[in-house]
Image (tube, rainbow, N blue to C red; front, side, top):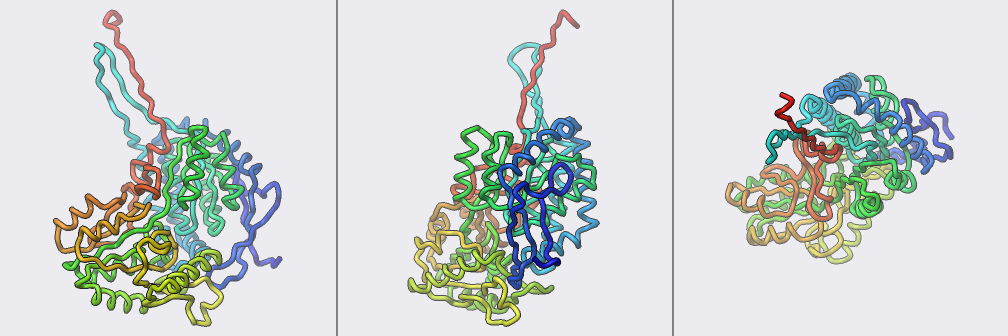
Length: 488
């Protein structure tokens, strides 16, 4: 093993820890395919060690006032600001994002922390009226206990922030299962929490694969709430497994999101946002606009502009590049196979369609921005999340037809419509089956104070972030008392 390869460890009870089995995974640089890290492959025993540490630290952390917890979160955010470049550099290397994208993601995570740190001064409860004379009632929020957080690699520091900050402000301790494709950023975040004064054991990181490490976290009886972002198939298993012990579960799952372009849309703006929705972050967004539905009368003009835009995008990891590689070779192979399958089935590949020819990108997991038309709406490419810079195009005659196509399939995460008509926009927004609807912008773009989540196979009805996330990580307790007149 080369001495230049970094070993990525677990973080338990405030310090880096080697897995009990001392088993390792290889993490490769997505830009060039070279070995980047050795990552611990944790077992159920390692997960148990982390959960025990989290449980041991729970009383001290939950015993603090929410205001004080918010102050600690504010200190974490301050350190994130100081080390923003280091965090962004780590993300850029691990994921292959261009530098400006990595910096933008860190900025979003910082805003997330600022929002939930402020919730420590609110954490609102309610006063309730009673039908009994002299009885007064109110609610309070209390922590669930140990939060098991499982995050993906597509936006690693943003995903960590989305889950960790609301869990902590509510008074929970945390065991985070880091994404095996972006492991080091979780360790850097853990170091920041310790430096900021978070008590040892309140935030712990487990490295490794979903099986066995993630599965062990879900199955552990000491884990009181589980938040997972990832595939629908895994989400279904988590819901069934954790549901047996009535653990609370928050699931943010897949998406196959429609992007509708009406005949009265600003075509240049629609092309701009369609390209961003489909191709930014190399299409590795659960909110990617991967189904582009266009009115037939403008279809040729729109497609011509969108193809030109797609072909103008620059691949690479340098500043100014538009999209980087996919995160790992498995995902890369799956995307190329899906494109080939569509072509073999008679679909027309308008642009892209494979890996780039550039020698500089030959070793990486790159896929050219790809647009495909003539795909059966019921085919796998139309219905299944690809997680790559691949979008399919469909033409329709009416808004009703566009809505029917948008609502086809099991997912319901996000949707976008481009139109100059307020009536059309609101008619569509009220009827499309999606948890997030955007008008004249892209299919993505959640902010810290806005709830994010979907219908159907896109989740189980919970929302993160926004104040709605507090309902995931806290219990509501109703407290009533009776004022006795004879004691006054």
